[in-house]
Image 1 (spheres, rainbow, N blue to C red):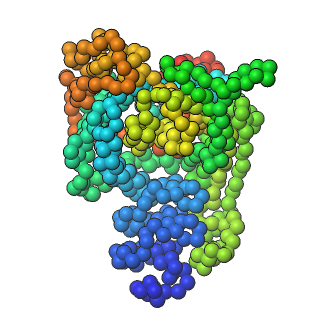
Image 2 (spheres, rainbow, N blue to C red; image 1 turned 135 degrees about the vertical axis):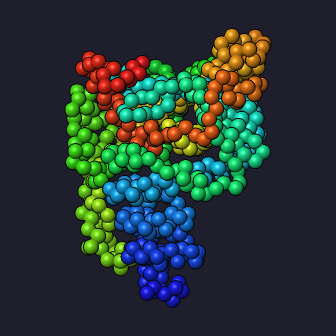
Image 3 (spheres, rainbow, N blue to C red; image 1 turned 180 degrees about the vertical axis):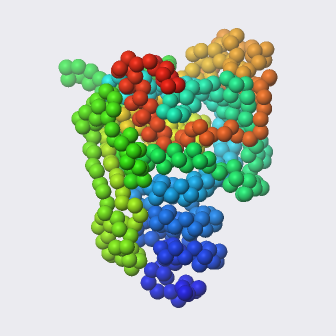
Length: 539
């Protein structure tokens, strides 16, 4: 038996008591140790793993269950940058993936609830505004840009209320999903009401998020993943895309000829902006396939369409201003060849050996030159007004998460009226802020903007506020009806079931890539784009 007193232990069981119990799969003793609360449940071992990471990598289901039940953080990454969920998928254990996915979603909800007071306070202090964020997706690969979608997010902020309208919903069965949706966040004293308004079906899904007194069991039950969600992970590669910006540098773009050069400025939606280039931006895409069957590996690796063959060539040569390095690493993992003493000894070199299934890893590193347009006289404040909204959207939207990662860098002074950054492999995003407070085009229910007779989707045309023909872009008044359920819509409690799509970075990356390839093959081959229920949005 392992001594109960941590100070009496020697060797790895004394330094890393939870890890040591996990290593030997002693989940009952682990339960007692965790309950005692004398050891940090997030302690890192010499290999950069928490106890939960170690349990997941080894496939020790009951140990993982104990640690998750006592609050082990699912969102932590190990030293190699892999999440607990990604390591669970690599084991090919359906029950383990289901368990980890459930607690991952549960912890996301808890984190979201915990952040509500801070978000409400930021929204309350910030000046009210309306702005449009136009998202355009482009690619350096010819023809791909023609089949990429675009969307304009419309954002209203009034007091503690927020509304975001969108038409690009995500991906389902490798198809771009379109729809007319509004997401409303209405802050109250002790709670927040969240509504998802489906204007196509005239249905409102509403949920009240209380700041305190949340029932843990109810939240866990609501986070139970479906079998389809679990299987979608086990049959798709584990893909992670990271923007490496540790060496990023910003430099003013120049313009001119014959030796005469000046710093470049451009007008963006009526605002004069300084143009900057961001160099040393690396997009690192890592793909793991050790959990896939040979059939699914063939689907990932096979070049079955003209565009796939072309992309294979494009990857070998890179694109404009892009250098692509592709490496394949197969670790010779053999759990029986590594003893506990070796694993927990920080001075012992494991080499290529590790626990778990032998890793099949492909790494692609591309260098990009991001671009941004900064206006020092813009009325909007990035930190006070826009950043909190991006933080909120980033909780469940991988695209906004990428944008958040970029804008949190130490940018040059000014508001980024336009940003162009890499999002995924072969795909860039250009985000442009415009029509601030309805200065460029009329906006219903925004006082101070030019008048408009066309109400927004789901709004009551009779309630459109009268407005003057002149407007100041530095402030506006927004009608409270924008943050209410539209008249005539069915109101349902609880969130809409999200089993049809998953906006995780890895699944979204894979879905985008496969969707582009599929759509591109139809585009190149002249095939009927409506066959098999596929209807890409060719712009």
